[in-house]
Image 1: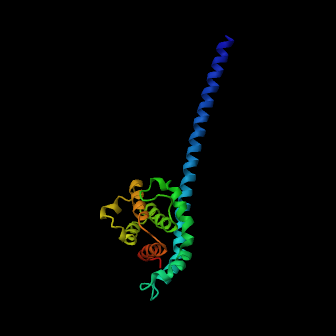
Image 2 (image 1 turned 60 degrees about the horizontal axis):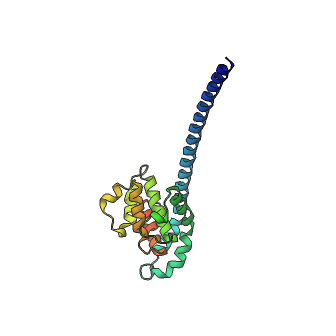
Image 3 (image 1 turned 90 degrees about the vertical axis):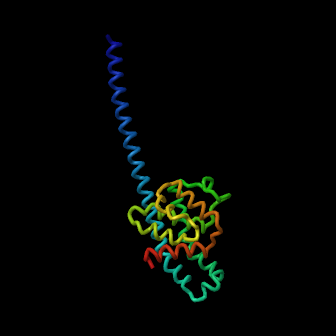
Length: 192
């Protein structure tokens, strides 16, 4: 009889423990999802803030009379102006769990300017639902990539994003190229 009572008590306690444990696991998973979403929102907002901050400086350089004749003269100045975008771009790349190994065209690691262009692609992908004009503007900014029209309509797919990153990474993209991409995008978005 004692053994039966002990087994019954053990079964009740086990069922209670498992039930509480399952609830705790669900709570933990739910909290992790909220934290991940908050981190994603922060990364997106941080990138947009940095992009808006550098946009007027980029515009001032690109709009100079002699820029089109000798853009190389502005390479170092553009590197300094674009530098605040590097860290927020890296945060977006981490947020999407994109590694250099899975991107075609990357053999070692992203350059700073490829990182900025990649950040802009990710930002555009992540904000397209709330602002559809973002896709038009990113298509305008990356017009030299020769991506087909249907590409941008399926841009919400991670695989397509990685393909776009590969297209960016496979081209030399120095400070001048990155600045022109940023300029075209923010101009189209009417942020400058």
